[in-house]
Image 1 (cartoon, rainbow, N blue to C red):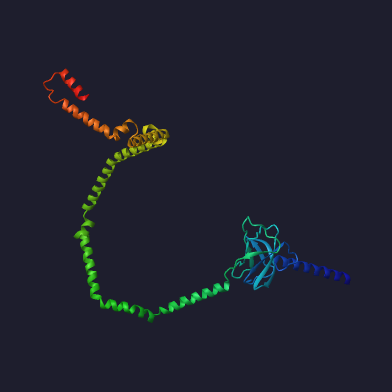
Image 2: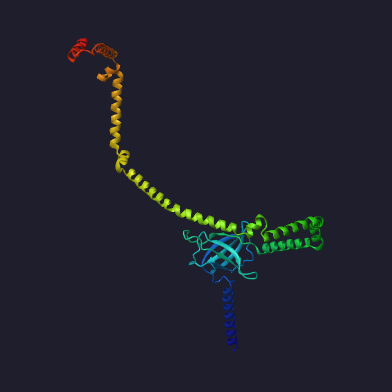
Amino acid sequence: MKNSLETRLGLFFALVVIAALLLLEMIGSGGLFSHGKPVRAQFTSARDLKVGDPVKLAGVSVGRVKSIKLKSGKVEVTMNVDPDAEVHTDSLATVQFTGLMGQNFVALTFGSEKAPLADSNTVLESKEQPDLAAIMAKLDAAADGVQNMTKSFSGEEFSKLLGPFTDFLKQNQPKLAAILGNMQNISTMIAEGKGTIGKLVVDDTLYQTALSTVTNLNSAVADVRPLAEDAKAAVAEARQMISGVNKGEGTVGKLIKDEKLYSETTMAMTNLKEILQKINTGNGTVGQLVNDGAFLKNVKLTLQKVDKATEGLEDTGPLTVLSSVIGNLF
């Protein structure tokens, strides 16, 4: 019986140990069955992060915190991450908490698809979250500021603030009353249709005039619309004509686009220039006629002889005149 009782106690103790280990592993406090590739990240503060806290990728648990230690003025957190998790080298690690009293965890981002997957002992970039204590301190300071502002509006301070305004109202009460009375009189006159503003408000003549003007304007627009259509058609024809000219169609298009005409015109101008140069230099018959002074003298002498030959021919017969002219000329 003794051996049987010891055996039962041993089995019971072993089962208790196994259950405790499984329980620790399930709540994240154990590391006996931890697996996966280790990746690291450095933070300025661990913020109550503990070994065994979960590591989540896009809200899905993919590992556990393996170790937390100080290194080079930072807190280095080593995590065991599932090898199948798509953690890239540019993934960001952030220490977050599930609530004001909840458990802390390390949140990872996917990173870019172009970046390679993180290997063992890859150091990921980290992103610091605002500290809850710092947030509470700022809220406390804001509350103190609001409390101090409300204290400044106590009865005595409020009376001091409104005191100058009350004195102003007392000193200018007659003027303010007169201003209000005048405003009441003006509003009454406007309501009765008196004055320019009253007539504009009450009399519908301005409305009728504006309506007539708009009607006339619509009629004018209707009359102008055919002219606009004709102008539009003319512009379209002008565009078509210009397009034909650009394409070299028609006489004007050929004059503008045909290079043969340009070449012939250039050649003609060149020939004309050469002819004029020859005339100016006295070359050729025309050049000699233009530049030779003797020819001009001969022409003058011939004209003088003709003038003398025609003198006194009024009473002479045709044959006598012709013989006299030939004799004088030759």
